[in-house]
Length: 367
Image 1 (cartoon, helix red, strand yellow):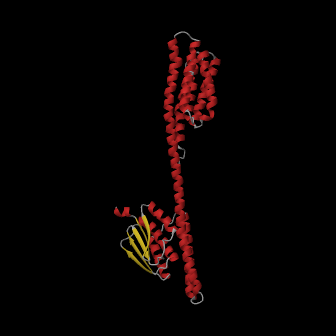
Image 2 (spheres, rainbow, N blue to C red):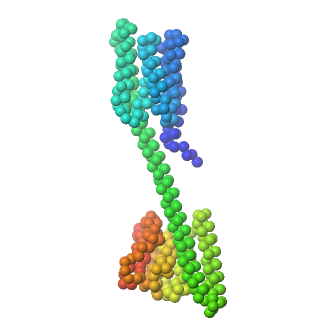
Image 3 (cartoon, rainbow, N blue to C red):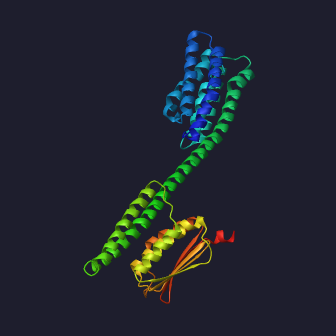
């Protein structure tokens, strides 16, 4: 899978496309302005410094070499104006300045103006050594270099903003990926709570029952212990499936399990099926049923439970609600967020001695 950031791809593309062109341009500068071999060496140093700055810019690290490259190219330009007599050597300082100025953290506009003024000012020094064709010298050494620098600088500022936008998008995608990982961890923790919290509470109830029966009904106590063993084994299997992303909660199995648990606790159960539950909703509705069953066994003093199922909803009503404020049920609170993330609603109400838990997907019902 290609994991290279988009910003890095763009910079590498710029390096591939423009480095050969700039290298050819630098060679033309040296060839056209140098009159002797030592002039070619000096002008070549300016071109080399410019190319180093461009390579580091393509790597996103131009500020690390900004000062030495600017010093070299800034010194080559007056040498060319006063000694070599060439007007093309502004190439080095203009290129380095255009790459560096937009990257500055502050005073970018002032630095851009200073670069243009420097190039134009040094070019004007040509009049100190040449008094022929003043207008032509001004055009070649002042106006053209300053104009080219101003235009390229004007283009590099939007280029910098473009790279900043690309970087922001990459960071946004990274944050989304981190959030996705966090949401998956929360989902995993919720599923683990559903599996093991429910099982541990049922094991606690059955163990207490087995202790009472061991002296008066040994066969029934053995049966309860066997069910505890099977329940623990099933929980181990479900935990492994969860760890390997193979678990898919079955609503029918949860409904049968809830019925057995309620009846074992002496609670009468009635199930109303208004319609077959849609498979897409079955997983979350099964989780709601499992969590509610655990809460009833743990917190309520219920004698009757009514479970109502439709295509996109479930309702569980029990008559064991305690007087007082609605208790804090953290498992259902976490489950409410997961249902809402899938476009559903989970409500919990307590009124006239009844506790009602209901989950539905109204948007899907309408479609």
